[in-house]
Structures are given as structure tokens and as C-alpha cells.
Image 1 (tube, rainbow, N blue to C red):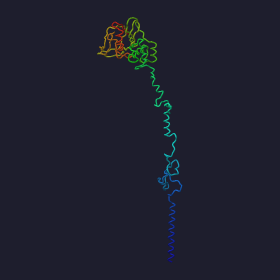
Image 2 (tube, one colour):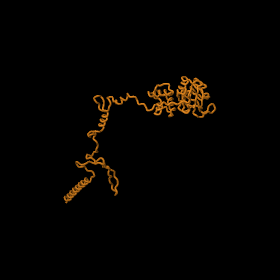
Image 3 (cartoon, rainbow, N blue to C red):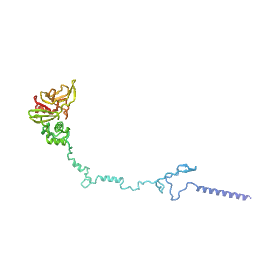
Image 4 (tube, rainbow, N blue to C red):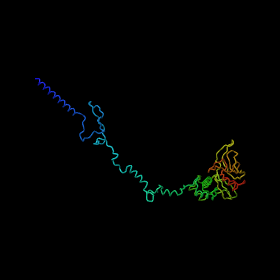
Length: 337
């Protein structure tokens, strides 16, 4: 009896042990993790096992799928990356660009020159040849130019009787005064620039015609702002001038009009030197008075338009010519029109 009861307990223990082993096997088969089969694909780095968890619609926990890349993961389980050593570079990469850049410099020939026209020092043959050429002059002649063609203009002006004392090729103040006078005589815009119209006036030999026909006469053309030195009906000198501007001005408590009266006068007084106006209106160089306080005199400012208080301005150099070369002593006729 006791042996039978012990045998039962033994069989019961074996059964329990067997059951436990079976449960362990079942539990092992239900595990969420398993070893990949040989030769299988390992999980990609982009599909992590630790994806966020959120409750499902029925209260169960569901795993949100991680976004997957546009391409399938490689079978190696490692992210694809270029091999800096083993990958081949295209022929037109950075090294190819350097080769092209070097090629732009031109291949050196046997004579030391290169295909782009430069020698071994990099000097372009055309540029080197151009250095020997004179720079091209502008189409117009203007103040400040120093050239042979300016000398030609000066010589032509002097031949026509415009006030030019020196033919030096330098376009300075004296040349400008003479060109203004020519442009006034031709009825052109007074800019002192030798363009097509002024050149045409030079070629045609434009010279204003005098009003007087005998004797030595200083003619003052108010309309064209010119002074003419005339001898027996022939113009021997044409001078740029500026007469009264017609404006009102105050001097020593009185009001005057800056006008130059027209009429037939004579030089009645003169001062050989710088003289200050008695009305305190400025200085006058070697004035020759012909109508009260109105005189023909030199000035450092003679624009191509009316600008004085009533006197007639010419350049200091022109006034010196009138005094020292031409004469015009007291008694000389002054015709203002």
C-alpha cells in the first residue's frame, strides 16, 4: 500500500515537471524577439524597435509606424554612404575643372608664345601694339585741350581778326574768349566748343561787318556783345565783350539801371592802370571813358553775356592791345549800337 502511494506521487511529480517544460517551450515560442535566420535581413536603422506607443481605438496599445525612406534599406543593414576611396569620380569633376582652367591659359608653343595670342610674359600682342598708338581725340574741341588741332583753330581765328596773341596749341582763356566772339558773330550758341557749326563758321571766315567807313573807330555791338576795332571800314580786331545787364542796383544810396546807352561818342578820358569805381562797383583795368562814368575797360571776368553795371568789359589782354598796339587815344570815335 505504501509503495503504491509513493509511485503515484512520483508519477504526479513527473507530470508536473513535464507540464512545466511544455509551458516554458510555449512561452519561448510566444516571445516578440527572435534571432534572424541565417542570411536574413537585419532591421534597418531607419525602422527602430523603440517606436512611440499610443492607445488604439479599442483601448489596446498599438505601435505607430516610423516613416520609411523612399528607397528600400540595403541588405547589409547599414546606411548607404559613398565610399570616399573606392568610388570613381567623374572625369569632369574638380580635377577636370582645374585642367580646363589651366587649358584656358593657352598651350605654350615652340616660340614661347601661347595659343591665346600672348607671349610667355602674358602680354597680349594687340595690346602691346596699341600702346604705341596715340589716344583718339574727342570729336569736339573744348577748353583744356592741348593739341595740334587747337593750334590750327588759334591760327585760323587770328587770321580772321579775332583776338589771339599766341598760337601755342593750348586751349585756355584767350582761345575761349576768341571762340565766344566767333560764335556771337555767327549767331551760334556761345559755349566755346568747336563742333560742326563752329568749325563751319571758321571755314567760311565769319567776321562781323562794321557800321563806320572811315577813320579809327571803336564799335560796340550791344546786340551781339562784341567790340570791333575798325580802321577805314575794315575790321582789324574782333573782341568778346560784356555790357550792362539791364538790372537795377544800389550804389551810395541811389538806384541805377545797369544799361549801356547807344550813341556816337568819343574817348574823353583814360587812366593807364587799375582804377576803382567811384561808385564802389569794382576795379577797372586801364579804362577809356566815353560817356560820363561809362568806360571801355579790362576785366578778369568777361562772360559771353551782358554782366556789367553799364561799362563795357573786355579781357585785360585785349585792353592792353587797344592801349599798347592799336592806340585809341582821347578823341577816338566810339560808336555804340
